Amino acid sequence: MYKQNYKSKLLEDAVDQIASLPGIGRKSALRYALHLLHEPAANVEKFTAAISRMREQVRYCPDCNMISDEGLCPICSDHSRDRGTVCVVESLRDVLSIENTGQYHGLYHVLGGVISPMDGVGPDDLPIKALVDRVGQGEIQEVIMALDTDMEGETTALYIYRQLVPAGIKISTIARGIAFGDDLEYADEFTLGKAIVNRQLFSL
Image (cartoon, rainbow, N blue to C red; front, side, top):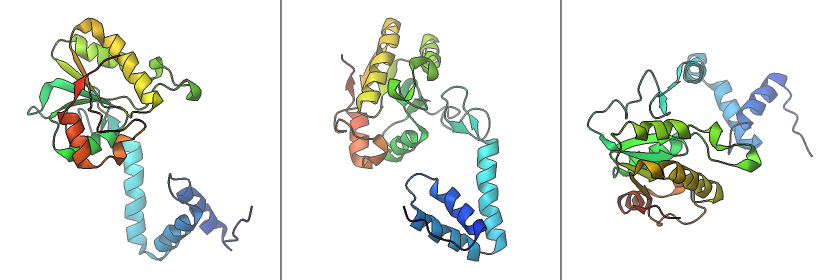
């Protein structure tokens, strides 16, 4: 495979690191690296400092597992939210997608992944027990499954459903405006909003 000669090890290292980000090829990485090279030093320092602060200082909400600057996340600490409803999602991206619809006003539980034996991820690797414990506190009346509709997402939702059935709460799933195999983050806001509003009872 042809490997471009960047004439600079420093530039090549920068391109390598930028290209390691998802969705960025080496041509785009080179363009970004050259852009940063010609930016004022103060701007580049602000850029790198923001990334470093995020990586070093970000915390995870002890209630829902979403990222937080400190303590409870803004959603869990917002007492105007419906505290009787929890939406189970895979990632922060899904939280942002659902929040952008403006159709959901409850809380979340972020799994940080899905059950995937092929990738060595089992139920004990995800904060599913923490969700069961939250439900066991008695305030939650409904859990909404809002996981991707691929095989891993469906497997995870089924496992969680079986863990929550003894609690006797309402367990629902987003409406099938989201087609099988779709990722929530790529659904348009209207479709995703309607899928949340028109959710249906979870069934085997």
